[in-house]
Amino acid sequence: MHSLWYCGEYAQPAGAVGVLTVRSPRLIEIDRHDPTTAVHDDLLPGLSACPARVSPKYFYDELGSSLFAAITRLPEYYPTRTEAAIFARHVDDIGTQLAQGLTLVDIGAGNCEKAAALLIPLRVGRYVAVDISVDFLGDSLTRLQLQHPQLPMLGVGTDFSQRLLLPAEVGDGQRLLFYPGSSIGNFTPAQALDFLRQLRDAAQGGVLLIGVDLCKPVAVLEAAYDDPLGVTAAFNRNLLRNLNQLIGSDFFLADWRHVAFFDEAQSRIEMHLEALRPLCVRWPGGERAFAAGERIHTENSYKWRVDDFTALLGEAGFSEIRQWTDERCWFAVFLAQA
Ligand code: AVJ
Image 1 (cartoon, rainbow, N blue to C red):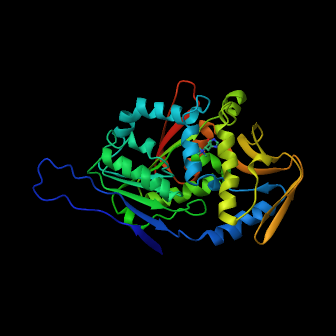
Image 2 (image 1 turned 180 degrees about the vertical axis):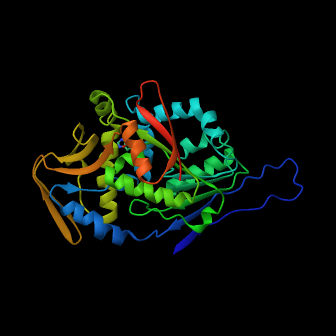
Image 3 (image 1 turned 60 degrees about the horizontal axis):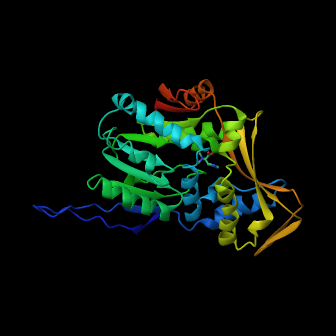
C-alpha cells in the first residue's frame, strides 16, 4: 500500500567517544503517484464547474510551501505568531495535562517549526511529521533531526484531505495528535466535524492538541489575507503554476488577480483568483473559458467562536476539553481527550 522511498537510519556505534551521531529521519510515502484519481475526481470537475473551484491542497508544492512559510512571517498574518505566543506562555500548563514520552503526530507539519518548540517542554518521545509535500518535509525533518539527534523521527508523505490514514510505522506509543495553525479552518463546519472524528480515531485513545483561528474585526482578517507586500497574492497565484505542472494547462499568471474577503454570514475568509480579461485555458483533454471578472474559488478559511468549537469537539466524541487563548482572544489552542 505504501512505498518506502528513503530509509537511512544508522545505529550509534558502540562506545563511540566524542562522535556526535545523528539519526537520519525515515521518510515513507503513501500513494505517491495517485494524481490521476485526485485530478479526475476532484481537480478537473472543480475547474469545469460554475463557479470554478480548486482545492487549497494544490497550493502546497515545494514553492507554495515556502511561500506559506513566508506568509507566516508577515506582520499582517497574526495566526502563526499568536498561536506560538499561546504555546510559549502555556506550554508548561499544557504539559502537566500530558504523560511523558508521547508520540507527537504532526498533521500538516510543513516546516515543522511549531512542533519543534514543543518537543522538549512536552517531553515528546517520538516525532512523526505528516504532510502532503514530502520533498519539503524531508528537508524540514533533516534540519530538525540535527537539533534533536537522538529523537526518533518519521516523515509520512500523504494527502490526508480526503481521509486521514496513519501507517503502522507511526508505532503503538501513546499518541498526541497535533493539528495547529487553524488548518481546520479550510473545512466547512460539516467537513470539520467529519475530520475531527477521523482525528479522534487516529488518536487511538490519546489526545488532540489543535489550534483554531477565532472571529475578530473584519479589517484585521482581511489584511491578513491580502498583505501589501503581495506574498499571499503570490501564494494564491502559485496554485496556477502548480496546475500547469500537474495537468499541463496553460494558465498565464499575469491574467489573474488575487481576491480575498471576509464573508460574515459564513464566518469565513474566501480566496479567489479573478480573470482580468476574457480568456480560455487549455490542457490535454479539456479547456475552460473565463469571462473577465470570473473567479476560481481557491480557499475558505473559517473563523470560529470558542463555544462553537468546543461544542464541535464534543460532537466529534472528544472529552475533557481545555482551551487557552491570547489577550485579544484572536486565536485558541484546544486540548481534548480522544
Ligand atoms: C494553512 C489554512 C491555516 O487559512 O490562514 C494563509 C492558509 N491562506 N494565507 C489560513 C492561508 C492564505 C492558512 N491555513
